[in-house]
Structure formats: structure tokens, C-alpha cells
Length: 385
Image 1 (cartoon, rainbow, N blue to C red):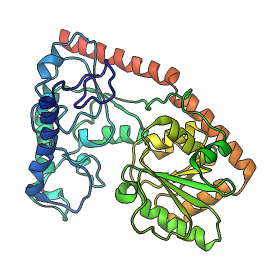
Image 2: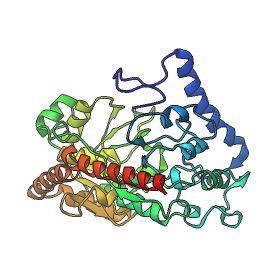
Image 3: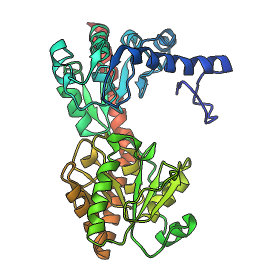
């Protein structure tokens, strides 16, 4: 595994060795993202990557003896747009967001990626140099060889098929795997005791990197749903991970427990097991690990019926899929998942069973092997032409 910054100490994970190389890797990423900020104005608060600067890795990758080059989240100067176009080995590329077929955006609610980035379909809230169109045109020019794309969710796979850039590229939907032997339920009472959480009240869990600051994660929609639940006299309490307590604790009508950033899988597993329901109010998401992990720990998930979330939740079997962005239905789903103890036990058991059936390594690895074989065969066939 080749990465920009290796921190785990695993010999199989290779990154820059010297402090100078590490500093250069970080500087390149900051420089590339900083280059475009003065060039255009946008109200769209999503991450952007221009991936302009060459990585210096192409010759080594092309000369590698591996059967497959498997790309993951390479944008942001792990590989530049030009680098990706110069790869001549069999390539499988697993997408974790929309960047590959968009311009510079990692996620967008616009549809230029379907239509092509033209001057006449630019959003009205953008101005200045059209960096998204410029990056998309570079991809269109430099990516002449179709790569085998893998998406963890059916939604993202359909986006690839509908895109103007990659519509004729081969696409497979293969979920992210999870070690279901490691991620499994912990006794709820023990979990709450370990985390010093109350034992006799329903606990609703929400988590996101940066807590509620990312609008895609929909924390504002959860707030609105909580107000509805408050009006109905619900006695639940909220647990938020991924964020430390703010200076002024907001009043959502329910007690809130902040866990901060959790960095080890064991503590996360205990936290999922302590909760009665995990809520995923995202407006836009692929196959978020939090929902997969919660399900593997037997915690029912309540989410909106949008994007990749239906791949995580089987409606009223492992959790509840609310009408997209309806805070009324989100509140209804939370109540539905909590109000009946026998129902909750069935949801929990079904969530765990479905996680093992869909996401365990024994299930996912053969799917990837099949994709690798297809990619190698396609590369071999094109080389003979």
C-alpha cells in the first residue's frame, strides 16, 4: 500500500521516508488546494481538489510487477489528473466520492457531471474562473483509457453510468468490507457502564467527522427532528461523537453527551453497542462506515432514503428509511425504532445478520477477485489489439 503519509508503523504501508519528503507531501496538497481559492467564488461548501501537481510516482507504478494497480482516494496530489491518465498497468479504481467524474468537486448537488461542464450550465452562485470546468476538461482530455470503476454503493455506481465522463467505463458495485468478527455487539449494560452513560433511558447516537459542521451530514435536519420529538414528550438522550463539547452547549430539548474524537475501534464498538439507535441524517453520502459499523454491532440505523443509505438500511427490517429530508418522518422513524422492545430486538438481530451476510470479508473478497480478473483480461485484450 502506497500512501502520502504513513503513520501506523505497518511495514506493508509505504509512505515518504524522510521528514523532508513528508513535509513536501503535505505542502503539495495544501498548495494545490490553495491555488484555486482566489480563482473563483462559490457558496457550495464542498471539498475541492484540482490535482494539478505531478506526484513523481508514475514511472514506479508503471514498472511495478503487480498484476493490478488498485486506486482508492488518490485525488488531492496522491496522483494528479495527468498521472492517472499515464498509468499503463491494469487499473481498478474504487470511488469513495464523486470527484472522479466531476470537476474539482468531491460532492455536488449540481448536475454538470451528467451534462458536461459547459459555460451555459454553471451555477449562478459561482463566479470568477470556472475551475470545475477546467479540471473536468483536463480529465476528458487526458483520460483516454477506461479504467474499471468500483463503487461501494448502488447510487454512486449509477452516477458513474450517468456521467458524461465515465458513462462507457466498466462499473462494479462492491461494498466496503468490515471485519464482522471484530465489529460485533457488546452487552448494552456493560457498554454503558464502560462509557459512563445512563442505563435506563433511550440513547440516540449521531457521529460525523467535525460533528455538525459539515452540512452534508444533516445535523440541522436531526435538530429539527429532535424538536418534533421534544414536542411529543420523548425521554431520549443524544450521544454525539466526532466533536468535543462546545463552549456553549446548545439546547435541543434533550440531554447531550459528547464523546469527542474516538480513535480506536474497540471504543467505537462499545459506543455503538451502548446506543439504542444510530441516526444517519445525511443529505448526501456513499456507504458511510459509521452506518456499516453500527449495523455490525447490532444497532438499528435510522436514515433518509437517499444516495447510498438504502444499501445500509433495509426499511423496517434492520432500521428505518425516512422520506428524504422530511424531519417529520425522521422523527417518526426514531420513535418507531425505539418504542417497542421486541421490535427493537428484532431490528438489532437483523442488522447484525445482514452485516455479516453483505459486508464480511468472506463475501466481499471474492467479488473483488472477480473484478481484478475482469480488469486483467480487459487490459490483456486491449494490449493484443
